[in-house]
Length: 509
Image: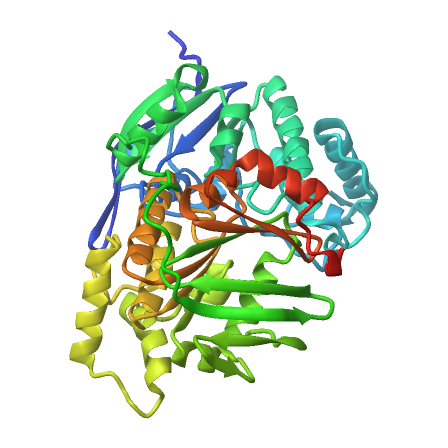
């Protein structure tokens, strides 16, 4: 009797040197279904996708496409089977036209030559009729936004696919309206009968768009669930393998008052075209949050304080010392540390090991001519691997082999090794799983309790409220006001970000 499943994976296992990435994992996808794949970083999501797309070969297990067993030995074999993938980073040629990107390597021919008229016609049909996207397909891809480039990648995948489309973190660089546009496309493809595997760290999006959820943990299949019957609390518990108490991500704003000792003070700090002049004070052991929409000036303030960008007005004090010219080297020697927003571009060094990435900050602080002995390097690396529970078979493994959450922990380890007095965290939990987010939040509170001052930036208001003692609200490169204690509620912050507040500093209005 025929099965109603479009794609099935049964008992799939995959190991890498020192790591069992998948252990007898099962997965089932129906035609006309959007199925989310959920799990912490390191749970096996990326591995199962790479096995399904032929990038990695399984060690054991079987795959079925509409009841017919298939072998996925290469990306080409996966495409021939009808499985197409769109990855988080759009993998297209920006210097070619939209139409060329859709048909590259599959160009229709006529009389021994590429049939450009057919390519343009079919590209327009795919985009307009199947994705409801109306653009000039003869224009260079780079002339379009990231969201449109994402749609072009999906158009190519849809045209290749015979029914299975995998979307791996497709919304990570899209704004709210662009996400809704993508979801409309996904629903249209679902109506056509396509089976879609959706991978995302955003719970709201998963619950909005998916019919089913499969949870993986530590390379094992935990279960398949109907989305509407699985509460978010249950999902998080299944992903992290333990119950998470209600107070684990909540800050007690009635706790002992923050130390009154002033660590850092900025007066009338600003940089033309980047952030308008603002005042800022940070106390020892305080977690100060910066809240605001994209472009409000959150990251700009962080970079100004750390000296990545130089203020062209105002004055900065660390303790009682006036800092005349701040730069990253000076910042590090003064006890400042900075975990940047984009860990892949500004944080990790791909070619180096975990150990080498961890000791980078401390080596910079000591200077190039004060080499850290290997024995001390290993001791430091192991200390923070254990402290932060970094999942790795060896400190000598390259950092780019780690999951996103574990890479983020390595960056934190790098700066903790410098014994910082101020830790600047710019989106420390972006793009990582729920379990790792909770661990990092808990660590932030522990570090503050030890007297480390923390500047915390997050686009997630719930996270900002949970972690911070005080919040500075920004809008359009202006400091709008400050909130603390019971004032720190999401609705109040959102109102201030949207409309401003009576407490706006009048000189910048």
